[in-house]
Length: 68
Image (cartoon, rainbow, N blue to C red; front, side, top):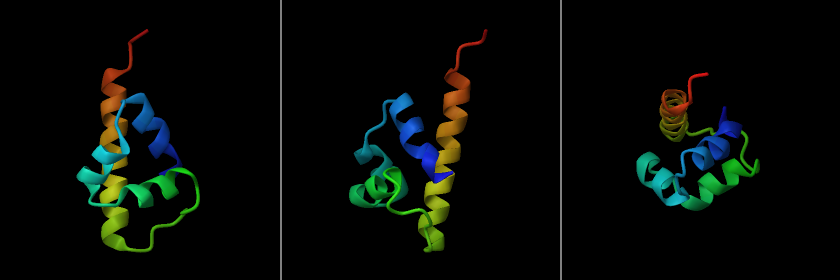
């Protein structure tokens, strides 16, 4: 699930600053997650915040997707 973050963020034109503000995580930490340096978030609060944010972006992306 963490590997989706960058793709979803770019698709929705969201900056690292905005993700950091919403999740409470640092820009550097998010950047390392997106680049694959961090593959598992051990802190439960951080993991919950980021997974919740990714699910929110997935929902937003589906709502914006054109209907064919």
